[in-house]
Image 1 (cartoon, helix red, strand yellow):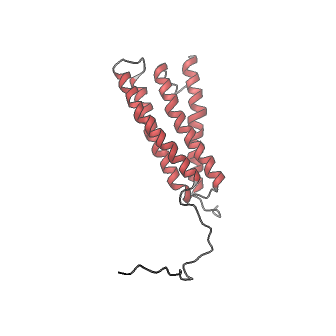
Image 2 (cartoon, rainbow, N blue to C red):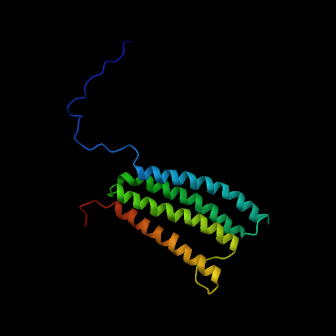
Image 3 (cartoon, helix red, strand yellow):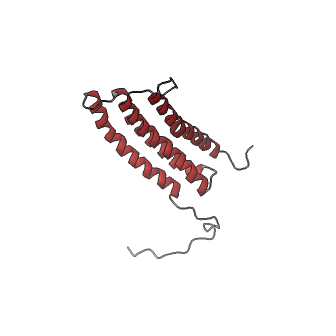
Length: 163
């Protein structure tokens, strides 16, 4: 069989549409953050085991929550990264959305690991300084960025001309 000779593309195929990179930089950033979060989430399973067997003085249920926060955060990051081309945002907006999701999910894992060690829930202000500090940290670095990011993600699906 002779090798195929290169043929020019028919005129109907050629377009003047801008070339969009196969992987947008914000999507790559999020996927990279997700890969690392999955790794540390899986490694946190050792922390869970150590807490459950009493080898570290941490609350085993909160350690397990940290482990699951990392795994679930990985999928949140990948979901947003996959949908970036579907959103109305340009590169700067995509980067802002990416960082909001990255910060919220990494903070969720990290603060939950620490609060397991501190043995505080941090879900409400109760007048206990350690618990209240964890509550503040969770609110500022997890809850607010995650809510803003989720809202921006939903809003990004609106068409540019939609009202």
